[in-house]
Image (cartoon, rainbow, N blue to C red):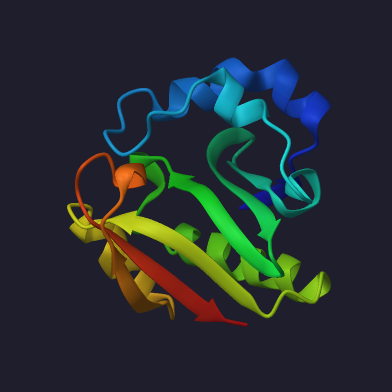
Length: 147
């Protein structure tokens, strides 16, 4: 697996590939504006993952009050079960460490049981359960990984 930092011009030129990758994923309601919005350090912390020169996944992250916060983490179904997701988490940890962000945090919908197990298997711990409008009416697990 090869990783590439997501610079905004790259994303703008390939936005259709990113949106197409998640178009049928029920846990993502992102549109072009979500992908392209500017957030603190987003373009330094986010990356795309390529397998055999094909976009396989991505991690959109930002610096949220001194934390490497993952807004959207995705690996294509055909790439799962091959330790590629683990490699993506390891890459996120390496980036977080290089920016001296000692913690990675994210939200995972309670109904995404497979995703929750993946994060736990890769060292994340559930910090709390959130019941707010962000989860689309269902609770979210707020997860944390100390780097």
